[in-house]
Image 1 (cartoon, rainbow, N blue to C red):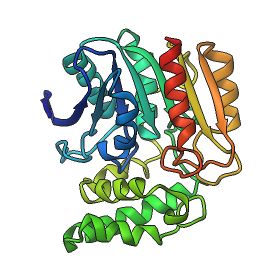
Image 2 (tube, rainbow, N blue to C red; image 1 turned 135 degrees about the vertical axis):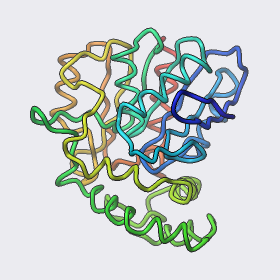
Image 3 (spheres, one colour; image 1 turned 90 degrees about the vertical axis):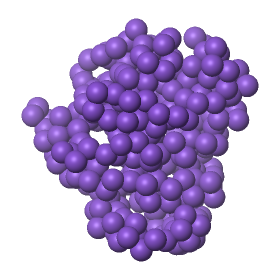
Length: 284
């Protein structure tokens, strides 16, 4: 389905009863609605499940002038206001987790609660953006920035790219095939082939302004899932967990032992995300 906003056409998937309580799913950078396909059958019997392609991702429109965090937040606001029309539980991973957190801070009347999976909510020095120096994700993003245009130009199929990715090393060490569910690897391939690769330029700009303020309270109930701090690709660090515990009493922080950044994709740790979503839905 499509939603036309003032500056971009947004694609979204809508499952379940339109009159049921809504759950909005927000993906990470380079991904798409496909990354949340596994979760739909768990929720659609009792909830309306809407999965959004952010601008520049999936089947949503492109922005020739570039991308900023404020644009991704605007996409989430537009879907909440014009599609859902009632407060939603928002589930977000990585970039989508940062957008969900910012949505809860800036428009709390639209949000019943949040589940944030290793979200981009890291605090940085004054005047700096959320840079990834020292995080193994950065090398992966550099490789993707270079290789994705060639892959798209080659006409490679989703199936063939999925097979290539199975043997590729993940940011946390093992190959994707060892670490991730098959559906997650296929979703990764879909996301790469549908991506406007210039969205990754945002990652390499340490001055890009985030829309989540890590020094303000998250005012809605929620669960934050942090990667294991020993993993080289985790975004949420112990200091972030400590700050959330101090500033946001409605937020429960859970560290997923052994998990890297791709928690919901992981064969060993997907259940932690499902448990968090079910726990929050039962609580609010």
